[in-house]
Length: 397
Ligand SMILES: [Zn+2]
Image (cartoon, rainbow, N blue to C red; front, side):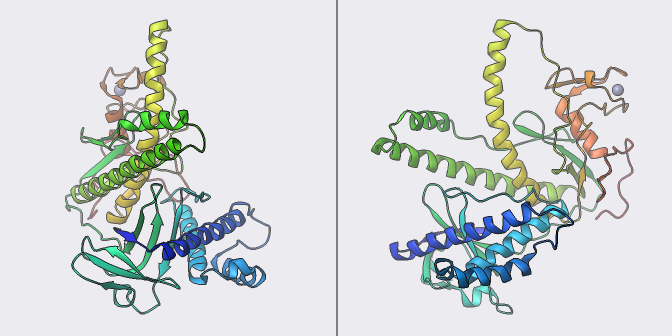
């Protein structure tokens, strides 16, 4: 994905905002239909059926008909792709889009015509323009070469910045060809643990986030001060998101290049089945410490989650066919040295000590080694863990 800052005129901006609202409206309608679908009650609402219904709705509702058909139809196509990705197990279940949070729409090229030749133009050294249906040419900052692409997406972030992103056909990165396997565990702390003993640290939110959130909550509703606080917070959050994206991009490239087989947790299963670490003995001081660190851990975890999802998706684009999903359910309780499974071996969030063989290791690293040794979960969802020290896959490159 290469992203460029877009600078619409005020008149263009009004139409772009309308497109965002349309795309969100159509997406949510289609999502409602799909999410409430139960097997055995008629046909699955697929793209073609929803697209036909959209045509009827546009004729019946003039306000919907006044919007761009391309934009609305593309929203349904994107929704269709999102559900396909979900059923394939590579992505999470599609969610509803919220105003102010998911502002964007996609424009697809005319079949047979590569995008760059008809919808992107260069004005001068620093400026380019992209053609948006019924809006015309919108200027964007030409910060690097525009790649060949089939579609582009226009987005508005929470701090009011517009971007255009050209969907590059994901570039596959070849593995090293050594058959080397790595397991990656999400861990409980901020970092991802690799079975090699390395950690990957997703960037944390800026320290000012909490202060800005507090200031926003204290400001009087509707006041100038509140508006200012809201904008400032939005700017910091948007910058955080950019940093996480950047990190996910770099980390996924690095991993795809270094290993032939990459085993990660299956996102569809999650860690819900994992037992929590045993509670330390109660004391007032301890409770204070725990509370403080827990709320912080919760925040960090949420941030890490979003970074992880992005990282996993980019990894699957780049190392397509070399990423295997493992059921994470017992990975934190299983000894990576002897295979003994016991919840009591997990002494604390950070420490693993096997109750059978006495082997001790950092708990996240132990889990990552288990993930590296695990079988891929099949389409039917076999939750088994593989035997230890499996031979590297033959011809894994
Ligand atoms: Zn053991």
